[in-house]
Image 1 (tube, rainbow, N blue to C red):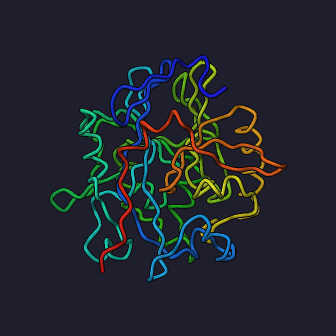
Image 2 (cartoon, rainbow, N blue to C red):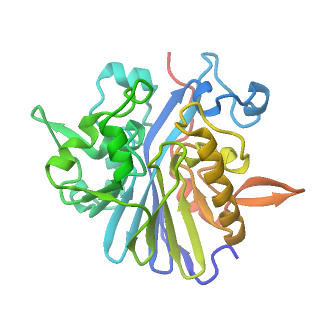
Length: 311
């Protein structure tokens, strides 16, 4: 089963309709990072089979967010770095936007920021929720003015009290204005958002990290977020990142969801994987492998083409 019961259709670039769901991948660009972050203790000889560092020892990570239309709602899952970065921060992230910002991607779909009804933050690291707010006339305001934002309460609590390790990625300006404006709802564990969209707690990368399950008929998918940075991280249980707050918990989480994804032939959406942003798990010779989903190419084709970073 790849999409049985879901009546999958392609309707132009970036859009797939599966039963009662519409799904789009929307890019906020590409960042260039030291491989020691996403690959941690994985030997260079192994991760080079996945991605080759450039002459500055940097590798690309995408910022590929997901727009879902369900029950008349426009739901945005994660929103990248946003537009608040100064020139120094853009340089530090190695941020490139060859196809424009996330909001530009929404415009190509005929949507404005005001058309977003719900923003799901998988967690509050700045490369996933920096676009929550924008700076207007010196004041931080919700970037999606008509949207409700949802995140796990535990994630909000940890982000509100960062420690020496996390204060470099938890920034109050990405979420406090939403709390103050009554725009952010805190979830207490797994929760159904619509009949076809639900949030599930997937701890490890952070204690309150959540993934998002999508379902229509027999078709099922998951926006994995940082449970697995690259598709290879999902297939290789022991591969954890240097950013995982609880790496052993991340391994336990992956073991649970690997089995789930394999049994259901689920589509897995990876925000940071520029090579394989949509994949399924397959078992080959007793080992798991992430493989491309042919039917998902309509989603992938418009994403940014990788170019070596300037300078």
